[in-house]
Image (cartoon, rainbow, N blue to C red):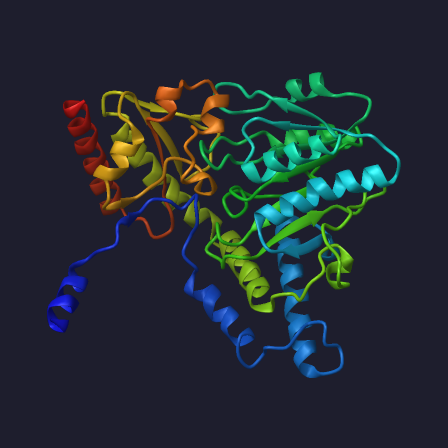
Length: 396
């Protein structure tokens, strides 16, 4: 019986992975950098009286320096958090609480295509009395500077826009918007979770006040991210979300996870050292897969055809329910939208915002290529999706 079970297990293969927008495997080089800080260098960075603590503190400060150099900011402008969701909350809630503390009644601006980790923060703040404007994007999912200008009020204090959309891949013109808002002395936050590691970033040239980063989208570990917080005379200080320690200048108290922070820095370093090579690889395979998928009748690409993340495909097969498609494609790991919304019975708020009908939204899938994707993977996946679409159409 045992031998039979083992043979059966050996013949079970995991599906081909096309969900890199959801998460990525940890690069072995990142893991190698992390391991010593789980074992012989296990000290608490807050332990200032001995070498174990000094080693951890030095590793964390070196990691902070690495990330700061990549995005062109000061080392002390990088704050480590648990990931993108916490960074978004800290940026938006922290700014609001600081403004309220100083006697202001602020107005904030965001868009209908933000990640839920941003939208739900704004919904919460509205209950607290914050005025929030939600901008409708164009049919590609972009928010124009003109729309932002129209929405400005005398008490507008912060604008938050996603850089690269996690569902449809569309890139907002962050530099144009950021530079305008900087000149107006309005805080600009961008959720750069999908963009970081995929495109060059310079927070100085781009007028960014607050920026959210995470490790697990760039072949780093889960459970760690960073928030860039600009230090300038116009910057409004942030209030912490919780209390209990002086770590991260009191903005994010709690024992710092040295291994995860080291992993974030190493993954960031690799991503930007190898950026041209990696982008060429993932984009060429993405383009080949898209070319094949668009040959299938009923196919429609969502998001901007050019100004998009280099690895993202969001595609609708009209009249083919994505629930049926997923069942037919158990040998391919893909998604119907944001990983954080998996299991939801409602259609994608992003697809709704760009004008897709309920039926088309329920007929949409997302695929994303990565460093480990091969041309053979692409050819097989395109063939299988075509086969599945025609099978479902024939049944329906």
